[in-house]
Picture (cartoon, rainbow, N blue to C red):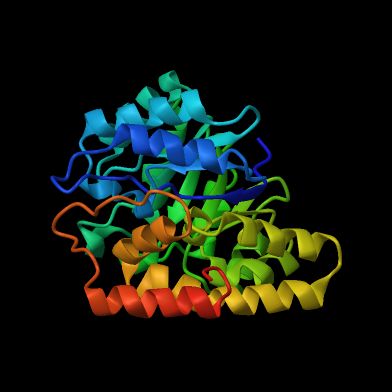
Amino acid sequence: MNITGIFPPMLTPFNENGDVEYDVFVRNIQKWNKESLGGYLVLGSNSETSYLTEEEKLKLIELTVQTAAKGRTILAGTGMESTRETIRLTNKAARLGAHAALILTPSYYISQMTDRAHIHHFNAIADSTEIPILLYNVPKFTHINLSANAVHILSEHPNIIGMKDSQGDVPQLESFKRVVPDEFNLIVGTASALLPALTLGIRAGILALANCAPSQCIQIEKFFHHGEMEKAKELQARMLPVNLAVTGTYGIAGLKYASTLLGYEGGSVRSPLLPLTSDEQNDLKKILTTARLLA
């Protein structure tokens, strides 16, 4: 499987009572279908996946498969804390039509999550799943950073076809690229590192920013491939404060609010996450205006 292009880790819209608004979720996909995206990640970190029930997760996968434009690659985040539960959920996602699964590093027993444990975990999953899997390295949330040695060993498994690295550390991304085969789908996981990643030969990005500003993420990639580096650098620089706001400063509540301002339907967050305050909303509006995303 050759995974290329820009993927939004799709937001999960909730109403004020905390219920999933499936019709809103579908409408967002229908709007994203008009953009030149490579595909969709359903159940990513920005989907508030850790707050979803299994029933909700499966429904969201099913709706993504049914609604996505033809030719889009559909990835499902199915990583659980145990190997057994990850295999079970991944195979359910496979039967609903997901093309591959993104598997988060387990982290609850963090002191025991050594290279040896991760290699065993991911290999066991890859041995037993009906679709290929990708590693998901996101130290921001798990406080675990996969080593280049572990990635090298895991990349040799025929059913482990790639990795999303959300650390945002370009030298680390390059160290991963050195130890994996050319056909391994190494994916950048933050828009802040998109342009530097493209210069390393990375072919895909799963970017929170693509929820609210997909065309800008796609345009950076197009400028790069057309050799228009100055335009790529300018747009990348203009998007950096927006990406920082919606992934760091204001988090998922900020990403949802920005998405709503920019023509999508972010919906509410699910408790214990809190919505933005009025001051935070005003600050985010200023950031979007300065970035020329909002008039």
